Image (cartoon, rainbow, N blue to C red):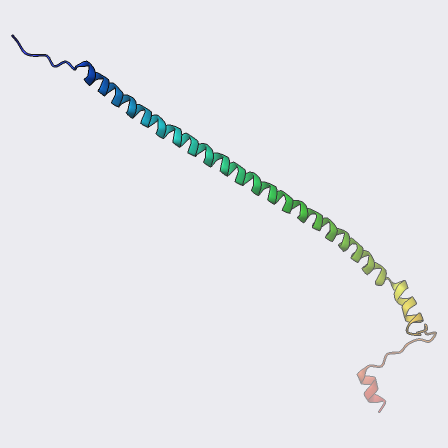
Length: 119
């Protein structure tokens, strides 16, 4: 008789195959969990960024409305400034409110030198 060959028996092979299947299913379980976690992170971040984009869009719309209102107010104030600083209005206000009249005489200005010579 010669050397004895080392063959596995059927139950030993089944245990080996069963262990390999457990390792394979355990690896697949980790892969599935990783995929689910990655999907969760991707969907959560997408939801976060869409929400942030919507909020910033609302803020931008509010700022544009405020800009429009301020532009209208600026235009109105510029028109009021032009009206209040017009020479015809100043002339009218000086006559009506202050009782001023236009002088018919020539106005002579007295300088400090002339004032000293008058003394």
